[in-house]
Length: 244
Ligand code: SF4
Image (cartoon, rainbow, N blue to C red; front, side, top):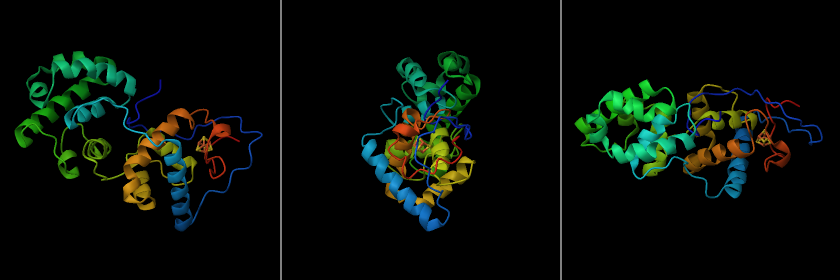
């Protein structure tokens, strides 16, 4: 099952595709300067290919995005959007979630998987928002990551999408996989991948870069069978880990 754009697992490079007939892949960039150049090229290709790429989680405000992002762990965006459609009608804000019985939240979000942990996080997070921030979502990374169920990735999503603040690069399964295939990093740990990407990319690209890599990962550079033959980055991609 495909999982959310923001789900946290880091799939490896288990790629297998018939790449016969394709031109040989260029060598992966080694020096820092070469990787920076590679990152710049990728930014340009992706911007041209996906000028409108955006977050696929439906939300009307930062709080809804926060809840949707928590729900998106190991779940498709489509499923999350289906669930939140009714969920946010029933529980429109942090106060409503804080007051709701845990079992009721669990029942409402069950189909997103890992529902017990997610319900616990959403209720605890909502309670903290009510008690400490008047029900609003704080706009600082340090405050966000102290909330239940909110890690650096979720905080980056909320700050980037809801507040337009580039505090980091959202590294989900797609961003991690593509970054390795494209030779930007050899790291498999999301935090380390993010640190490398933050170093390679200009800050103004951090938010859009993630959205576009996720689009590309879903449509072209698929986990199991990347469609290299129809990829706009074929000529610059070292295809690291892709079966030849
Ligand atoms: S689909 Fe594109 S980005 Fe992915 S490995 Fe193939 S050439 Fe590289």
